[in-house]
Image 1 (tube, helix red, strand yellow):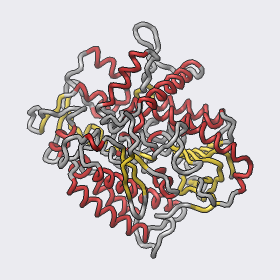
Image 2 (cartoon, helix red, strand yellow; image 1 turned 180 degrees about the vertical axis):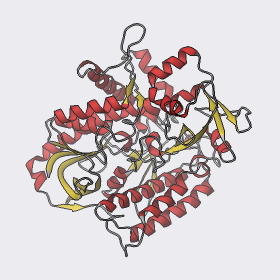
Image 3 (cartoon, helix red, strand yellow; image 1 turned 180 degrees about the horizontal axis):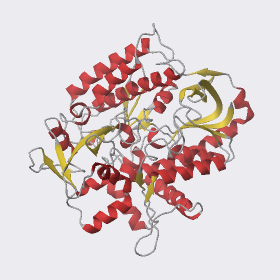
Image 4 (cartoon, one colour; image 1 turned 135 degrees about the vertical axis):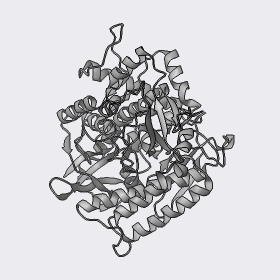
Length: 518
């Protein structure tokens, strides 16, 4: 199969990329690990949107609100671009496609939130109507490289048909989501960091991987990590005493420490009656869990836990080097959670609203950028000689004898515990990285999958690769900035006001990126 642009993924970034690539005149194929429109974190829930009217004071407040939290690593030019693109895309959804935004007391639509299932259902319809060929249940397992090192397509496996496939393309957009390490956070089982692995195998760089220790609050034994409403919560120890210092923002480390020794309980008792009604209207799926459990979260205490969300809510990802979201590899573009979100969030998670804005904005830019690149190549792109770029999990260096499930368990053992990844200390990170490096050596030598098993093998390799970039970058930042807090370096160091770039597979490297926005 041949095309101008191949989009890998199926969430908001992927669908906006496919839509805008098609609108730019390119032939487009979209390959999703699941069923486009239902897979991924957005489709599983609702999300706020960083939607701000183009009024100078409002825009200034919107940009200033996150700068300190992110360690002043964000870029105001990018913030402005995202606010403009998000404003346009949301208005297009409302005015041209009739998205049913709710209305406020003044009769005006409230366009600062989206219900994931309805949003993604409409995006799938729009993509299909644009003429995009969609490959559902077709996980990509590796990229293809041309002789000059540029990307030339991808290969994968069609789960329902039971066979492999190959797509030659002039350009590729990676919109595969972040990496949540199969933690069971809501909607993240498809987010195994595959895109970062694929990109690195072609020599692409990553950035901000130290900002990857995001943990969402969830009712115990559930997966709903929607945390906005916990700002109305009071947290309690197991004995019923209030847990001092615990909070949704600025107090999760207190919750994490308490969970290491006992249970933590919560009650949303700081919400008045008006707020309670508004909360149910804004995010009804947040309350589904409580309704099924027969718990009133406003009046009854319930046990909570913290679930790792990695780079899905963190800010690290594939480094982008242009306004069109191109990477350091010719023809390769990145969007959404697969790309670094440092441009607008710096070193602190944007939560749902910033993530949603970044997904649709970067998706639009990457799609148009990829289309321009591919169309400039012309018909000759389909005739290029290609080489498969995949390594770990597909082409072992030794005898195949490694179980991907064991690799996954090993990686999870180093990145899911609070006392390793959230409450970070250099000595603990170093020890964990040693385990992960050993795991990588073993899987590189002996992990091999074919057919359906190749998908699992590549996911295991991606988890290990992402974990190693995370911890190597965390060790390189010997300070506490944004999300990247170190117990052994609790202060912020003015000399480290820079981003950290990382890369490599068998040998992971890091370096400071000196070009930092003022």
